[in-house]
Image 1 (cartoon, rainbow, N blue to C red):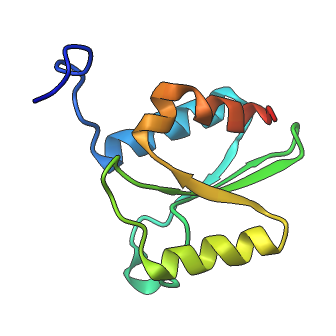
Image 2 (image 1 turned 90 degrees about the vertical axis):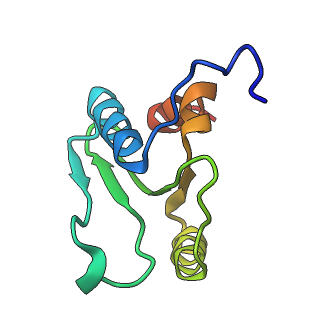
Length: 110
């Protein structure tokens, strides 16, 4: 049974969540945003979004998942390799939006 605080919070689909993330990224100076619309002919596991802010001198690679979505092994392989190369890469979920974690990442807060 849902708690009283979450009973009326609608669940976001991955597409709805992605739209919110893209809108927030643009508001925070990420004007180059790449998303593969049809991943069937792309490298397996490549992250959902690549966001670049020239003014902030930052690039973020993010895999987007629903709060219960599983990260596939190929996705983990990409994220781990990017992180080992010193790239800011990770997974975001709607819970990260609610907690403020995504805003902190976009701002570059430590």
